[in-house]
Each structure stands twice: as C-alpha cells, then as structure tokens.
Image (cartoon, rainbow, N blue to C red; front, side, top):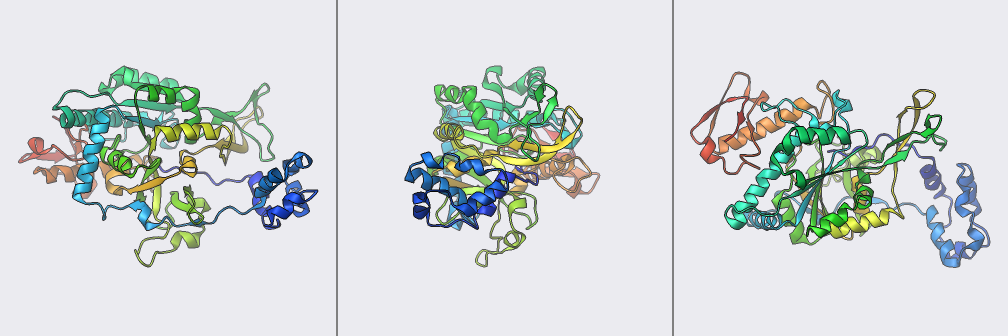
Length: 487
C-alpha cells in the first residue's frame, strides 16, 4: 500500500546536504587542486565524515571531479508532466479493450508473474500474524491472502476463456516475499488453506534480508552481548532477495517477461490486471506504476515527481514535500501540482528487475527510520535501515504512470479500527460499496436493514474480477446486504 517512511534523520545525509552550500561548482578547478575543498572538508569533519577524501592524493583528475559531486545539490523536483500520465479521462473504450485483450493473451502464454510484498506483521492492526492473514470482516470471512489468490484464479479462467475457449493456459506464478518474522506463519497459512485453490507449485515463498540497527551516532546496537540487532530491510529488499534466491533466473527459465508487483495490505488490489499489463506492453517501458489522485494536500502518501528537467521519475514521501509545494495547484488542470499518489501497484520488465538487482549491489539507497530497538540493555531509540520498492524508479530508463480510480482499486488496511483512516472497517466498506454497484449494474436489487451507505454486498472473486459476467447471477434477483454472492 502506501509506502510510508517514518520521520527520518541521517547524519551523513545532513552533512552532505548542508555542505553543498559551501562547495565551488567549478569541478574542473576542484579536481586540479592539490587538496580537497577546505570548506567542504571542514563541514564533513563536523559529522565525522572526512574519510570521504582519505584517498584524494591517489585519485586521477577525473576521479577527483567525480568525488566532488558529493557537494553538488540534488536535482530539484518538478511535477510529473501531464503527458506522462495515462488518465482515466483520456482512455477510449477501444484502448481499454485492446489492452485487456493484449494482457489476457500474455497471461495465458505465461508471460506475467505476480510478486507480492508481504514481509510485514499486522502490529498496527493489533495482530502479530502476517498482514495477509488478516480478516477485514467481510461476510465471507476471507483473508487478504485468499482474496488475492482467488483473483489470480479468476484471471487465469478469463484468459483461458478468451484465448482458447476454456483450455487452461500457463498457470500464473505467484512469488511471495516474506520476512524472518512472517515466513513460517505465511507458509503454514497457505498449506492449511490448500493454497486457496491454486496449485502448490505455482506459489513460491522467499525471505527478504535484514540489516543491522545502529544508534544515532552510527554504532551497532547489540541485541544480546554476542548478537547485533537487525531488522527487515524494507520492501525494497525485494530486488536483492530475488537475486540471491535465484528467482530472477527461475522467472527467466519459465519464459516470464513481465512482473506485477504490489503490497499485501490493499483489499481492492487487481492482481495481474490485464488492462494494466496490456497498457504496459503497449508503451514499451521498463517500469510503470498505477497512481491515484491525492485526496487532499496533507494526505500522508508519497507522490511521483520528476527529479530535475528531463530527469527520471521518482517518489517523494509526504514528510519530505514542502507544505507550500504540497498545496500548490496546477491552474490549467485544477489539480494539485503534485497529485499523483504512489500506492505500491507496479509493473516491471524482468530485464529491468535484473538491472536493478545488479545495480543495487554497487549503489544501494537506504532510508533511516528512528524506532525503538530491542537491545541487551532493554529497548533503546535507534535507526533502522530500509529500502523502498519505489527506489527502483530512479534506475528506470523509461517509466509510465497509469491512473487508477481510488474507489475501485485502493482500499488500504494499515491501522486498527478506531483510527481515522486506512482501517479494516474502511477497507471493508469500500469493497462492499464497489461490489454493490457491480450487482446493480448487472440488474440485481439490494435490500438492507441499515443505511445503504454503511453496507453493501461481497462478490466472490471466483465469480467476477471487476464486475464482468454477473448478469446470469444477478439479473432480476434480490440480495439482502450484507452478504456474499457466489456461484
């Protein structure tokens, strides 16, 4: 879901960023100098980072010029150009049908894999279980894992019907990233539920890595007298984990070309969306993301931006966006200038994932989150190092953004009931309302004992992926909300 970073502090980054005000932009002059720029060196000393210039005397002029880039300001961010977003308004019926058919054909042929980021526990939901095990209170009692598994089954069936009149195609491979804290429970949950109707061999589990936790002055925190405290490396650890587990090679051996990547805590996620896949293939880009319009300037969600003129697209967290920029309005469109929210619904080519995994070995990006860390002396405040899945967009030679309708595809489950937003109750209501609209559109009727705005119906994913093929089930029938509609 929303890929949120905690409020972060990093001494090294602060040093470099503050030092940029002092460095001379003339790198040619700097590289020819016999010593590093004194002003920059002094500022780095304040933070204990002067070792960055330890090998200055051994560097060539070119290498001195390169290390000088430490002192250059980061590229200013700009709004995403309007022509880089495929908005709902600009799509024709013909486009949508073409993309849907293209996607179904690729899925039937085994070209798409699904990659689930599921390393988190439901701590904020009041549960120690993996988030995917959570039941948000639907009439069916289904977990998030089951909803997603049944959507995969539905898409496989739709692809088979479209391409070969019901003959099964290549099963969709579902790669599920767990963490050391959720792996065993996740595997057992799938086994106990017989993989929710999927074949066991089309579901693959792998663990994300961990990174050491450090104190605010950069020292390791010891969990025990002989063990360094460690924490999961964030959902961006997926790239390294895929490579180290050799599952990128596994994908290639299966003929997979495209990977649909998403977070577990979205009750409305369209897993393996044929329309999104068809659009992605049509654009011929390396990476793409579904985006939704930001609801209001202060919404706690990251937004896509362009880093410098002609630069790559990336994501800036809400905490890093100046309030005046967050509130700025595009006078032409009437939307917020920075309005395209990142909701962790991504599509990548397999070739791009390989390049990212290889690149991160030499050039990793880390985010620091201040947290309570268990230590040998009890809990202490320290820093966890995390990587975010959206960091990969900085490496992409070409990126496309595809607008999704929030009410149809984004129902985050992040906070316990009683919170102001993103709760199981709010996600359940979004799903029930959406499915109620499907039933009415298919000719069905609803009765209800409570106000209709506070209830609805649940359509089994095995019946319909996004409202299609419901006429035979619903036309002329009356359903009492809330209820589950199945075959």
